[in-house]
Length: 136
Image 1 (cartoon, rainbow, N blue to C red):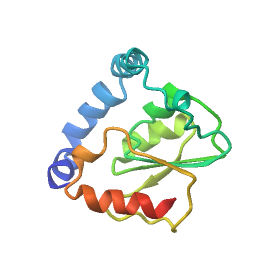
Image 2: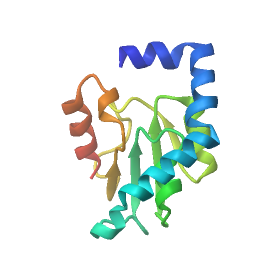
Image 3: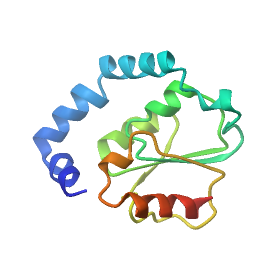
């Protein structure tokens, strides 16, 4: 996470990145279009999150829920970027500013844990997966 801490912690870079990339309409539109093209809908595989407690690790601005929809009972978004979490709140997430390596959530809090495009940002993938496993 050192590289992420540097880039996301740099005020000018992170503001430009979030505003022009993850917060930008063009990026979100491309991302949603790519998901549709890949037919990447877990609901079609029988893995739904309606009426369930869902934790989205590395939720960013909430693109996964915005693309897939559904009606989770509770949708908790975890990310290290305050700006991205503010955007995620706009689409229905309960925001939690935290590092996925050290989740401040109690064990067995969730029915479903998702982590889309997160692991390549993590220093210790095994640790993050272990933390995620404790949540269900």
